[in-house]
Image 1 (spheres, helix red, strand yellow):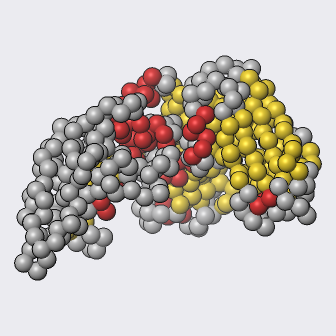
Image 2 (cartoon, one colour):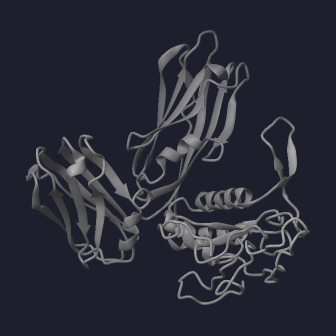
Image 3 (cartoon, rainbow, N blue to C red):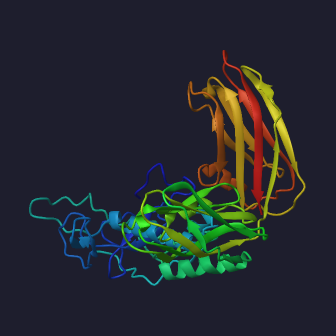
Length: 429
């Protein structure tokens, strides 16, 4: 069995290579760590046998460069990552764990289970003890039930061949199930844009609906005789800013176009924000000699109902130095439901954070270690722990959010003292 110490880390997938014949690529790893497989090339591990399979055709990164031989797990892995990106584009509210589950659940199992013959001895090497053919209990690639929620699993193919179409369809279906909400607002200010003036003009659209954003797009109709003069910024009610147009386009005239997160990745900064409030379009002309008008603009917001619940306190309490008792603080939550997402915000002053052990205890009894004496002599812990950056929090998904949540902080070394300034929870069901 091929194995390594990353196999059991939550949120990490290991991708096997699949030949174009739907057969396991001869060189590909097998065993209990395999999560999925993806189409790639095929070749014999030691090039002593002929095995069928085409490589992947792709650009090389050089101008006009194309290769027909991209392969290996170096090909299978980025292909899977790209499909994960498609899934997130279809439903940006999915967590990393949701994306992984979707990729596994929708993977195709229409694969070829034929094994390869053992590598024959060569005239220059009669010893074939190094042969990499799968051995029991991994000598069969057939799918089997192992109790995984995502379905049957194979030691050669993981949960199957990653399927972009099926995965994106499932992501869209979940978005619909989340109770997708859309807001459309439009204004026609027909206002002159002052020439060579950083103040510019601001036009506003108010959204009265409250939901968590998963997609933002802007339709703009603006006349100008030199669009390279312009900077156009969308400002959310939260104050977050996304620059839609940054003095590009040179001497071209007018802007009649749509901006979305594909054409304007800066809009991604708004994901997860709340929709309610005043949205502002700020248009500036930062060079002389050309003028224009903001004729009309339209704002479209997509998202789902906000199911988050926030609690916090600012106790300003001392963390006793070199004391195994430490401090414990409790935040009660009166809202019920199963946890789907969590954020833990900490503001701790301390002159040697390597002294600290920090744990979060859920009402149902689950305990997650957020910080375990790492960071050495660095000062302060001011950060937000999320499912994306703290894999241990995955253990709390599905637990009941109602009840007392407890934060425990212990200083396990002498000479430095700290203080818990603030901590907060954002729980989503």
